[in-house]
Amino acid sequence: MGTIQPKVAEPAGDEMALVHAAKAGDVSAFEQLVHRYDRNVFRIAQHITQNREDAEDVVQDAFLKAYQNLANFHEQSKFYTWLVRIAVNEALMRLRRRRPERMVSLDEDIKTEEDSMPREVADWAPNPEQLYTQGELKEILGKTIQGLPPSFRTVFVLRDVEGLSTEETADALDLSIPAVKSRLLRARLQLRERLSKYFKNRTSGDGKK
Amino acid sequence: MTCSDFLKELTDYLDESMDAQTRAELEDHLQWCHNCYVVCNTTKMTIEIYRDSHLYELPDELRGRLRSAIMSKCKGHEGPCT
Ligand SMILES: [Zn+2]
Image (cartoon, rainbow over all chains, first blue to last red; front, side, top):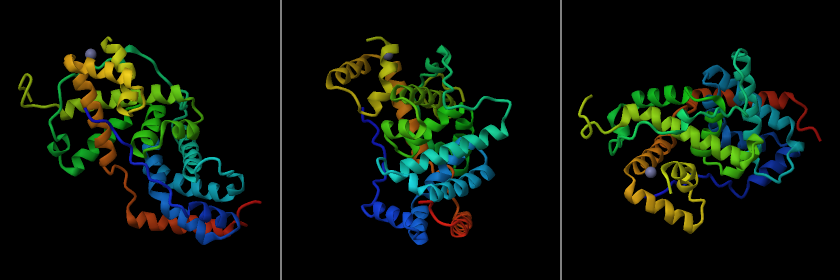
């Protein structure tokens, strides 16, 4: 069986030059960094906050904070990983503000047998995304990921959607590597379980719709 | 190897971060355990669907608006503190 190769966007060689120029006060160099990563930051923010308005604010605040704190970026990590760390913190802060009744923490690591033991083991249709229109598919995927605990959504979006490595994800979230792996496994299995309801192969099995 | 042993290794297996020996054991398990085969296959599909879905794309109009807001705030600020 084939495995997953993350689509890691390799930073262009000129990235450090842009960072240096921005540090020296060149606003247009910083604008190029915004242009390079604004879509990623928005996607991450929207996955975590599940709220469009909050995601917009996160994009603005994360870039502004990055700009103001460029001097503290010591370049042992990639600029993008550093930016992601800022964006995740902003997103979690907004989520907490909106749901003060719920604990929102990256340490949230709910362990129950039920989460990790697969119950649905029917295979999926060969091209599951073709069972639905683009709009329906997005709705299904959005609803499904919304049901995960925030810490699981966060690890999943960084690792599997944005293609950060396990090490970069751990670094961006201040989590240990085993903690990232355990959340990622449970996030993947829970999403799989929930999506099976929509995507399982209806021509085999019990034949019921 | 039991099914729950397999499950524990699933993430590393999909990410190809394991030694050849463990990998061979997992693949052997997949040969005869249909349930784990299905779970592995559909987990892989789950990841691919999310990766390819373009969920939460930033629309161009909003993108432009956010960028001007960011840049005008940056210009208003004194510049990176040094
Ligand atoms: Zn098995």
